[in-house]
Image 1: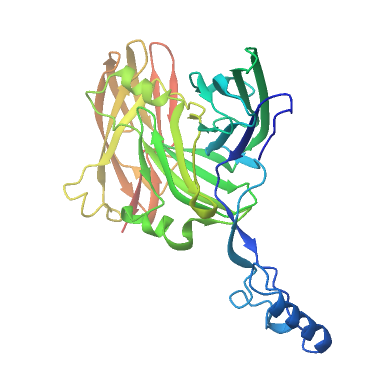
Image 2 (image 1 turned 135 degrees about the vertical axis):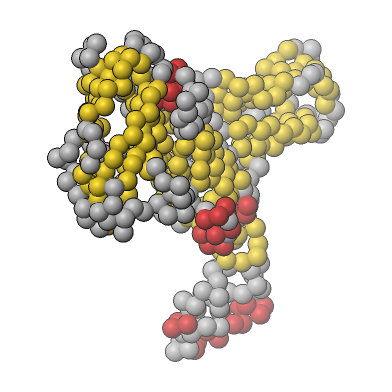
Length: 425
């Protein structure tokens, strides 16, 4: 894109956006053998006056003109952009600026100041010192700016110089373009006990094909991210080949598991609250490529969730008391087994807790031992372990261990839907 100065100024300014070129149309026309007179005339014109693309029409019949390889509509010629066009969020705007002295006199103290004006800020891009331009001498400079905001951007150019008559003069020109959002990112948060399952949908909002090269989640403390999209960490299946190509309007789904620190006896109440009340999950860092390998990078703002909060009484750990539980996590039908559960006071005051097993909620795995357990006095952050006995009465995957915890001091009550799920063989 170019803008010429007024004739009253000895300097001219030309600005061209530095972007990838496009392939020119070949403009080859399919030939129908039935129109022999027209075909012969076009053949003679092609031989006498060959075009830049090499031919006027192709040798294919109309029925074969749709073949993509034999009638490719693009030539090998490259076309430079004629306008600034539309920039996308995450791309880098680059421009070549040429200031030329078109007069027959020397122009002194030429200084160039370039800024990028957005809706919220003004970013300086160039402020060079004064220089001198002889008659016909050009001054070439380049500016670059990473697009971080949506909406209208204005490239402002200010040139000050000392004319041949000794007058200080100022020239100002501005170039306007729009910055659009190339990718629309939507998220959905699902809570899985202490962990978080984050669903991410990426939608191509442009009118061109994009290639996703990387999509990385950067978790915030105290979470650690696990990428569930690439099995065994093999990202070649996710980004290699045609998997990363996104046509206009296409959408891709990705899944991440944010793991909270494992609860332990040494963990303080403050650490547990930091996990349960954490609202910031992290950021998505997306890298893509457009036509001719143009690079774009987009980093989302901090992804947030609605804090699930925490109960004043927590069951830190519950596991089946079995020596070979790692090899065989199942239990035997109609054979009693024991579950060890650790109950912690995570409130701000001391508690006297009474735990009761609800025998009616899960009748397929019944308690076969004491259903009431007095945990006694628990200080702030203190935990105590209890042993619960159950008897499985049906095979298959069974959920069991509904409990009610009551603090006799404050009257606080917490109902727990189940402790564990187990496979009964």
